[in-house]
Length: 162
Image (cartoon, rainbow, N blue to C red; front, side, top):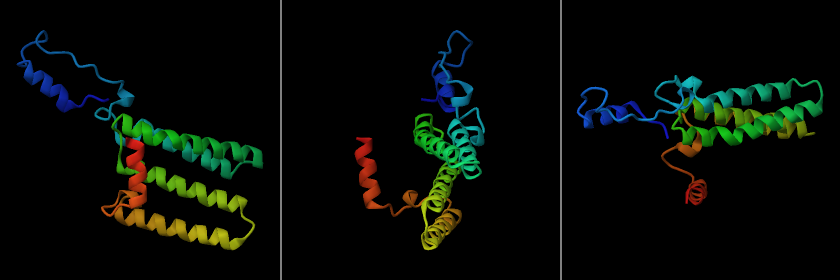
């Protein structure tokens, strides 16, 4: 868990703030894992998100299906890590949340486009994508983070946290 500036200041104030000997040393995490010392756009989970986008674009522009499938799989595997990293190191941000969810939806649109033989499937998926992205742009968060939470998603998350 990251040590914040407030915690360091509290340790210093509890020790009287007198000299180096009276201050208890607080072990700080490496700079890359300390949200107090890094700009949010360089948080490790956001770097994983950027790498997901690179893999997704590589899949879209891959010269053959086999390479594209491996790039898409890499993007999906990286999706498994960004959220837990953000929560573990206290690096959850609105930017990272939107980065992740937009990449998820672009991935689904691409997967439907690649696997569907009917234009209506692609069209319905694109409409869903536009509605979702518009909602996120207007409210600044994804559906599950609203004040009126989805009861099923909340129950599943509660089970996972227990």
